[in-house]
Structure formats: structure tokens, C-alpha cells
Amino acid sequence: MVENKANDPALRSWVEVPAGSDFPIQNLPFGIFRTESQLPHVCCAIGDKLIDLKALHVMGYLENLPFTLDDMVSDSLNRCMRHGKMAMRELRNRVSKLLRSDMPDLRDKEHHVRQVLFNQNEVQMLLPIKVGDYTDFYSSEDHARNVGIMFRDPAKALLPNWKHIPVGYHGRASSIVISGTPLHRPCGQINASDETLPTYSPTKQLDFELEVAFVTFDGKPLGQRISTAEADDYIFGLMLFNDWSARDIQRWEYVPLGPFLGKNFGSTLSPWVVTLDALEPFRTSGKAQEPAVLPYLEFEGDKHIDIALEVSIQPAEGPATVVSQSNFKHMYWNMNQQLAHHTVNGCNMRCGDLLASGTISGPAEGSYGSMLEIAWKGTKPVTMNDGSTRTFIQDHDTVILTGHAQKDGVRIGFGSCSGTILPALS
Ligand code: MN
Image 1: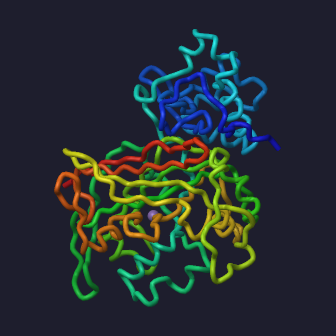
Image 2 (image 1 turned 180 degrees about the vertical axis):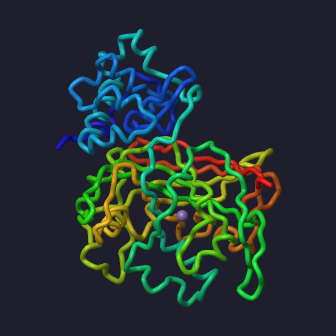
Image 3 (image 1 turned 60 degrees about the vertical axis):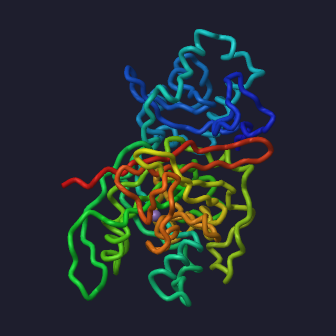
């Protein structure tokens, strides 16, 4: 067992960290960056800069850790993650130590510092993980209830299984893109009612879904389960995730096998993997689960995490408008329960699998995680700061998700997850 030494609120870095930065020394999220002249490397964020772990490795600063140089010259974190949770904890501890203001080893070697630090705004961030299998849950009670009220019976808004099963489906891993990647408005079949015939057109109800996703280490082989008590050992870290959705396409296609083309045209992932280790101080209890869950879904301790989340829409011209402020702690089912449920039948879990929360809505208006709910199926248009209105996302709109946990003067942020919608291809 390796002690997690990187979270101490008293730590300070010799690298300047601007006030309000998402990336103080207590965070040190992992990512993959490239410059014009170099192959992709593993890095950690610190303030407005990042530190190149390949360069650190070459200079000998990562000695006595299990990582090879090849692990650090990679277009994903998967090679590093294969070494497991304790190795990644040791690696974050080492980077923390090298960046501490009271540790001169790297600090005082100016020629090394010049080679390992990069300005974040001068490099390209890549998708941090090679996503294996992607699963999307539906674990926010407020979201599930809102959708149930809109599309089914308000008196029976939650389906009978909802409080017994962390409902989920298998999504498409290969259409997950890094923040900043534009997506075209998807086309497909749309039919407003079962009594009419479908038409083919660009979606008229393009939506975002505010989600948090987690990435797994190698799990157990096919046939074995991961318990709620073991789940933390298999979770590397968390990212912001916009699971774009075409509501009109989704509505016509989803019975009986679930979401398909209304979802798989693209999902946007933020570039920094914030480790579960860095988020431990922000654990909190979730809402009590009633009725009681089956024994394999029971868990001990605080397994929710207090992460403030925000969504804004930036039109092509004019100012952005905040359309939602929610929190990851509103989830009904926690990640441990999701992982235990996912593997209870013996389903395997591999390094780089991505498990997303489902749309995160809070209990109050203003905290809903999709335009479907915010504008209530188009009946309550949102007035933007430029005077225009939205019921769904328009062409050239950019949707920006941000999130951070904050406590004891420490802010652990996620950076941003943004994507612009381009007109449909003809
Ligand atoms: Mn989703």
C-alpha cells in the first residue's frame, strides 16, 4: 500500500499557480500533450503550465518507479495505467515532490526546468486515454424523474427497476473526442408520433448531457466480480463528459433496444484525468437510498464526491451564458455501485474502459444537466445574455462544461470540456 502524500493543503509549488487555478499542486491531473516538433508525451498540469513526464524520465527524475520511457512517449495514458493504482499513486507523489517549493532537486536546475515545463496554451492536448469499452449510466434520480415526467406518466416517472438497478447501456467508444473537436449536427430519422411516417433531416433537438466519466485500471478477468468495497482500487480518475444527444432521433429509435444514432455521433471528453486520489478529500455522503438495495450494491463510507459543475453556451458571437449549475454529489448511484453492478454477472473490465454517470441534474431548476430539461421539452426557452433564445443547441454554438471541488483553500478543477456544433453536412 502506497501512501497518498500529494493532497496536503499546506503544499506549495515553486511553479507559479494563479489564484483560482484548477491545477494547484494538490491536483496534478494526468494528460497527453504534443508540440509541433514532438511525439505525444504524458504530462501533469500545474497552474497554467504542464510538466512533461517523458522529459522527467529522460533526466532521471522518475528513477525507482516501474515506468519505462516508452510508457511516457505514448498517445494515451493506458500504458502507464497498466502498472496499476499503487504505481500511479507513486508517480503522482513523485511529481508532487519534484514540484514542491521546499524541494530544490528540480527547482534549482534551470536548464532542466526549461525543458520540462510547457505553457498549456502553447501545446495540443490529445484524448488522454485510448477508450476501450464505453458504458453510459442513467444514475441521476432528478434527471430520470424529469425525463419520465416529460415523456411518460408523472405519477410513475421512475420506471419500476430504477431504484434497484444502476441502469446503463453500452455506448460507442470510437466516437469519443477530445475537448475542442467540432462536431457536425447529425442527420437521421425523426418522427414526432407513432401515427405519422418518419422523415429524414438534421436533428432539430440537439442537446448536451452534463456528465462525469471515470476510467478504469485493468479489472478482473471475465467471470469475476468487483465488489463495491474493491471498486476504488479499479478507478484511476475522472473527467468531464458531454454526451451529445439528438433528442428527436433518440425518441423514435430507442424502443426496444435503447439509444443508438441519437447518441453515437460524438461525445466530448475533457483533457485532464483528475485522479480519484486527488478527489478523496471531497468525499461526501449521497442521498439515502430507499428502498434498500440488494446486498451486492450495499457500500460503506462516503462514496459520493462534491464536485460543482457548470454548463455554459457560447454563441458564435457575443457572450457566453451559464445555463446550468449542478453537482456530482446529486447522483443517486455512486461509482462503486456502478462498477459492482457492471461486473456482477462476470462482465470483464479492462484498462481504459470509460464509465459515464449519465446526465447529472440537481433537484432545483437551474441545476438541470440537459437542454431537454432546462427548456422543458421546448416549452420554456432560455434567454441568452445576447438576447437570443435557446430550446436546444444551435449551429455554431459552443457548449462548455467546467467543474471543480473546493475545500480548505484547495481547488481541484477539471479544466474545460468544450465542443462546437457545425451545420449538418449536406
Ligand atoms: Mn448520456
